Image 1 (cartoon, one colour):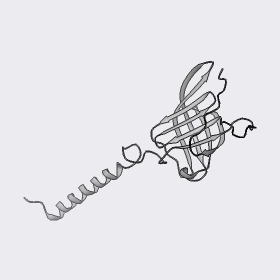
Image 2 (spheres, rainbow, N blue to C red):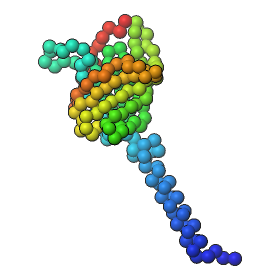
Image 3 (cartoon, one colour):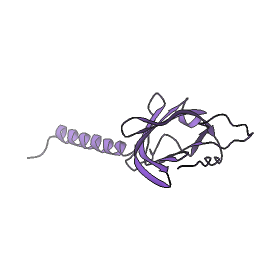
Image 4 (cartoon, rainbow, N blue to C red):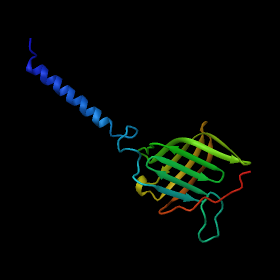
Length: 163
């Protein structure tokens, strides 16, 4: 018994649709495709979290470095890191899960944390971002502070006594 032409056509169309869905599904973040994050190159934001500096070129005590597949925040005695894809929602907010390293008395401890970054405008062209770091319980550890975009090489975070 031979298959009817309509049935063969339906099976072929269904197979083609399934193949198309598999190909399209492999293009996004986390699938090995090109969608590693919301930016194409490294962007840095810096800011001061303390009283205003009197120096004409103050060193920041907040450095946020965003890469297509990594995020790092450095503030005195604290460092947040995330490796992998990250996203920004339609409101310009990135909530990024990662690790918080806290140094006190010469001892560094690590714990899960969430970095929340609210961009002013599209990420690629944003000139300011509000940064807040929360612990695993959702309690604010640092911030919120506003940071300005730093094109080129970002200055190092000021050193602080972490005792």
